[in-house]
Length: 417
Ligand code: EPU
Image (cartoon, rainbow, N blue to C red):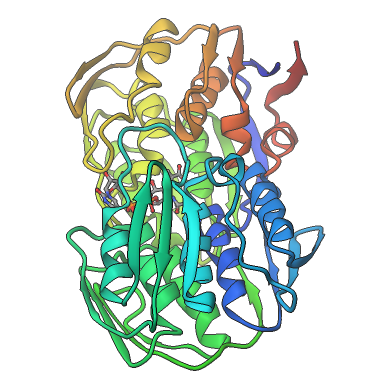
């Protein structure tokens, strides 16, 4: 078993460069299959989720070449085959293959997608979008079979601004006949990144970054070159770490607008933060004030930063409250934080954090990706040694996390035990 061993309380100084966005990459890679050509994507993070997508592409007979930070995808020999459950259940984004294979071949079979266990994660909005675009869907346990005589543009009113359903509706809509209008669409920057790449491939899409996306279907798409945007959740996680341990710590290669909900909150709490056009500098501040947070869809406070932010709140003076509005079970880090010395009380979708509390190094478990990030932040500020188990979750989402933190002064290493 691989574990992360961390010796806490080291000041961090220097620069951390943010990688390409995981949640862009996992949509952009399947999207390349909409074209009948070769696409090169740069700033691909070297994380486990991308390894799974690469295996899935190879399974579909797609030619893939991965070099440091880039992936070249040649779809000439693409085959439409049911993706085995052991690949599709590794990550949520696997169902983007469902959309592209449906768009290209008018039929597809695929298993329910995986992803972090953070409460029920239904896909009803994606199924609704596919049905409105003309697919007939049958469900056989976890296996979905979809067929369409023709995919036709439609009005898709989403019941909630789901990221996955917005991406899936776009992926099918770009090759469907006529106009597709997605209303109540998600506005996350990763969706805008996807629309940018699809537009370069020849798609006709308007409304990126707004709640109404209008697509005029085209006959075919061609390959292109694309650079992924920086990962706002990775940027946010290191900014939180900087607020606790930074000594003129530079978080480089960011789009400040994408993490504004976080930096606004940090400034309100009294953090020492200088924001520049594509980087920020942060110093630790031991007089942070308690605050209240509610997670919301973009541009609100990101649910993916909620768990690392909880660790920060254990160091703020006073009572903080945090409401999780996106997922039903995203507090699995809390018992471990309490084991380390935090004082957090959970009540349904709200937690109350009383701070500041001194944290002590302990053995803890990453139950999911961002819970892992929360426990990593806790281990970095704790007295003594911590061991984080199940770190595969963490490695799914943060490129070179050990190297990046070691380079700025953290004492952290992966051990096989
Ligand atoms: N929902 C439904 N029905 C649907 C779709 C969503 O009820 O058909 C509800 C569920 O409660 C679901 C929630 O809405 O859990 C959020 O779903 P959404 O579709 O917006 O999220 P997602 O596409 O499954 C992406 C990211 C998540 C991130 C969310 C919210 C990817 C691969 N994943 O998930 O990232 O939390 O958007 O911003 O893009 C992570 O990186 O740690 C992560 C979980």
